[in-house]
Image (cartoon, rainbow, N blue to C red; front, side, top):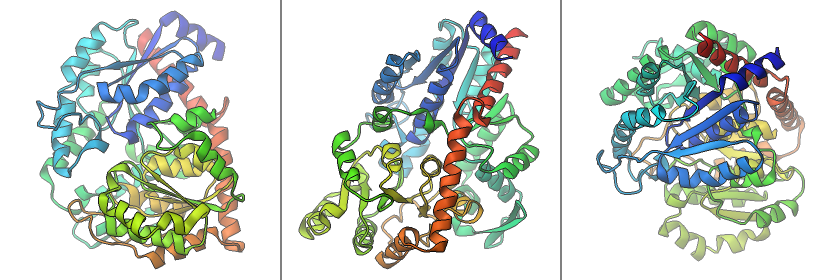
Length: 488
């Protein structure tokens, strides 16, 4: 079957066009997925994004192409000004205010006609289009070109199932209780995504468009692996009534250190300096603390995190996002001599960090995370127990998966989702940060069992993406599905 499929791929000149939402949480995994597709013989793969995002990702594509993959990256001008956005605002991590989110999505919808013009002149002609769920207008593009559209969902099946079940639950109560895999899971109202917590007409209208576009899709690609959540995958397939292919973890396509280091953005520190620091630490002794590319953390809360890291007496790497590293934080770091006090025990990185590279280093034994799905799955792939600090969107669902279903993490104890405009609140004090770190990093039977489970899931993840693994086979089934459409 494999040789027959390869012949078909080469004869048909299959061309996969990938259109991610301009957000790191979509661009990074969809670029990784492009690499996995490009490794298959006879496939042409093109990623379409905006000029500033193309500049960010061109080095990643150049390295992949030097390795013989052959991925094209084509920029489309972004109509940010027409949608009322400030200059150079082409990625969600550059939005200075939540008030600009609506403008951002308006600008993305204005890409429909330019994309259609581009696709009309592509060679070979596109065989299918793979897009983020957050770009519902791409369904019209696929219809115009009479090609199948597949939705890339940067979430777990657990989260997708929870979302579906929560949607169908009564909305008036202060909490929602659902049953997943014979397990009762409780979500206080304050932990649900914003659209579930209050009437948000514009947001709900956008979500309705996404649902409608998803119904017309040929299938859904999930960045997860069947072995990690087998019963949940089957349950979600029944509930969703869609073609579902688990094709992850896509981050494992980055086998070389250089690929892990440069993935997603330019790192804020030198590769060798980072590795040298990690090499100097004992195996499993370092806690890695990072809260993603979109989570805004107030200066008072950052200070509490820093003091909790210091009080734990554990070696740590602390990532402070560039926009969070305010004058107030720099002043505190300097006046309190934080980096001098922690010395060689702590490494503070201001800006982008090579997360996959850091997590996969043997010195790292714990991960303090905001529970974004990309970060959560990267923690799973590294076999590292997690401390969960969810903030918004689906992150509380991911926390339940990590702490209750997989049992490879502990909660820092956040009870309420972050509300944009109220980020100045301190949700977690230093004592709770310290306690959670000790709970994950200390010795003891419970901790060792947690580490053992984490290592087992890491093995599953690596096996799934290798030739013959479940995710590898699902990518093969996806290609076969596209071939069927092309031949018909």
